[in-house]
Image (tube, rainbow, N blue to C red; front, side, top):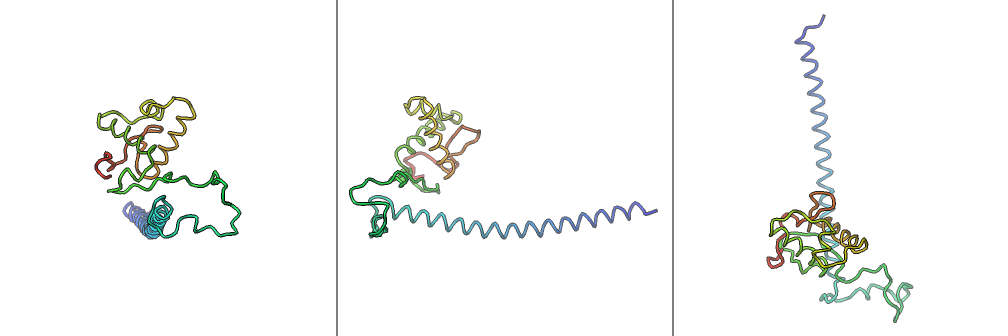
Length: 181
């Protein structure tokens, strides 16, 4: 009959092997994550640069029309833009320290201002219907859903957080409009 100490040593050896396997797997995943984060950062920078180039009034040498060849069937002189085309200032940049609210369109700035006022007054996060009331909008499904879409976009870009489903507040580090972030 095996001794109790012998059984404990076997279990300890099995557990040690499993810990070593998990550490190796964690190291492999960490290495993959590091590479993926670098790639993500490069894409964020590239997207930011494209947004700067395509922004109206930018000092770029060539505007968006310069990228369209003469044989492009999408746009012809005198025809309006296609409905899928991005509207000026509708792109929400990823929030980073020091990024001013002026980087956002007026609609997004109004949402941030309402949430900043609530935060300043110590109120809880707002639901989209409450934001619609604060913004003076009709509380109808179309308006509330449009507001929810904008709030979700701001959340995805780091400007807002959603501590509870459907309730929004300013993201950590995002402060009032006068402070430059």
